[in-house]
Amino acid sequence: GVDYLAKLTTLALSIVNVNEYGKIVYDLALRRYLIEIGEKIVTNAYSSTLADLAISQIETAESQLYDLGSRGTLSKGFTKLQTSIEESWTSISSAIKNKNSINGISSGLLDLDSKLGGFKNSDLIILAGRPSMGKTALGVNLAINACKYFLSSSTQQNSKVSNITPSVGFFSLEMSSQQISTRILSIESEINSSALFNGKINEQDVDKLKTVQDEIQKWNFFIDDAPAISISAIRSRARRLKRTHNLAILFVDYLQLIKIDNRRSQYNRVQEISEITQSLKALAKDLNISIIALSQLSRAVEQRSDKKPILSDLRESGSIEQDADIVMLIYRDEYYLSRSEPNPGTPEYTEWVTKQNKCYNTAEIIVAKHRNGPVGTVKLHYNSRYSKFGNIVKNYQQA
Image 1 (tube, rainbow, N blue to C red):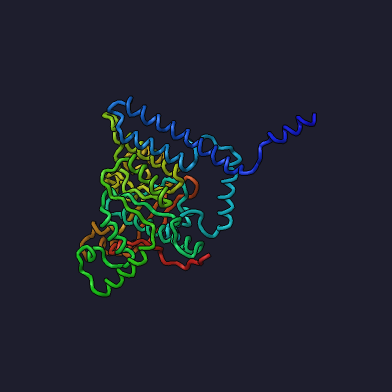
Image 2 (cartoon, rainbow, N blue to C red):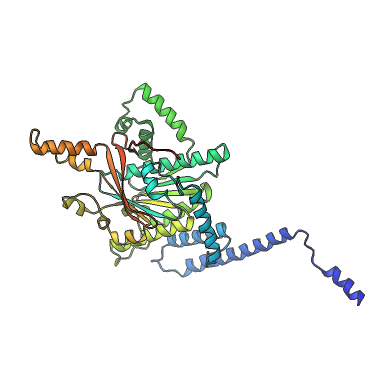
């Protein structure tokens, strides 16, 4: 009757503070996930064999904690098609809006951006070449240009640089951070790198370096020069950089120097490289970043009359070709010509001079694989004195 209905009104739940109640439920759910992770850590630590290294367990735990912190769940799981379609349409709309520009991270090189459309999130890009072709130099140039791109974009949007400005990470397994930094100073100041290493510079050069240093202070550029680093350590450090400094693009110099965890005697080098490239591709997807990994080419190139590299020249190539979204092969004809100079006064010498003039200060970037776009060759200007790459001078119309 009426009394019962009146009693029901007092039992009805209020919507007051509903947001706070929702936060409590969400917090309790996260706590349950934390308990689950903690129990797994303890169980694995007690029950694992010596072959299951502690560092691998740490990496697994860190990965789960990262997923929990960034997604609020232990794994992404299935995504409804409609949700993916909406994300795709957002990307397509952005590309339509910027049809005369790029839809990714700019390389700072007009023809390369035209070919690739910028470096996309979740892409694994391989940059390969023989020694002295300029792999590391190009990698450093691309990293510098990414910093400038992020700085310009953030400045336009926020009027000043803040902690949300995307950052660039650079794993240098071969060169020290000081050597990389000196290269950057050489590229930006256009002062010969050997002069910087030897300290043979004048007062004007010092002033240029100070100006360059002031600009570099604005970049979010992080270098890790740990030698013989493992793939699990790369994953862990990349996740931390993503969490703390909004990592957007990661460079690894170079692929063949990375160690794998739990190396087994039955693993050959091809299998090891396969595990590394699969892990890098997974990391690019997991963090939603671009990864540019430098790679060696096999000596087979040197045994051919035509030194231009092809996909099959990739060292331990099978998995690299398969896992990469883009493969770029760097080639400089000038380097090989300088090593085969004929005797002056001969017809061969005249022909050699013609070829040398044609390829002087020029590098070719052969886009040998492009999962979502065209392949082909892009020519860049290359100044070996500063290890600086730039655009071939053309009458470009800026959009």
